[in-house]
Length: 114
Image (cartoon, rainbow, N blue to C red; front, side, top):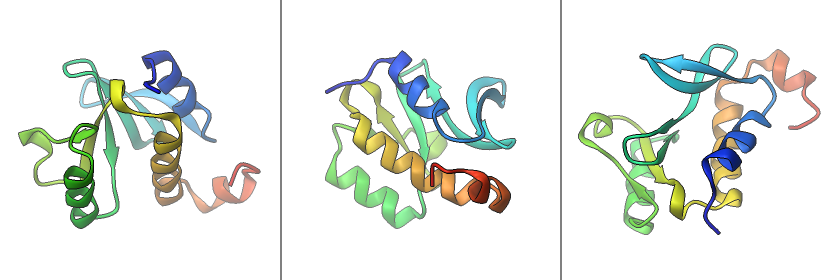
């Protein structure tokens, strides 16, 4: 089931330490001042950083209707997820992995969410 922008915001902000911020002048979400994700108004997509270029390429091949990249993100381990195709379970899983990569040890230890 497709998510709305409000639902995406709610899921993103449910992660410990998540807050609304800006990144390069665009609205984004951060964890302790580190980039977490952002909604792209220009194509109604969510910017998701993945662990490697191999993972990015696999996601692009496996689910081209959901994941895409633009020339700007071509050389980064990042996918853009189309909101209208995204479901909550996939989003939570991808954000959880990103959160574990960027949240401080202190925040992870203090969080009962882990």
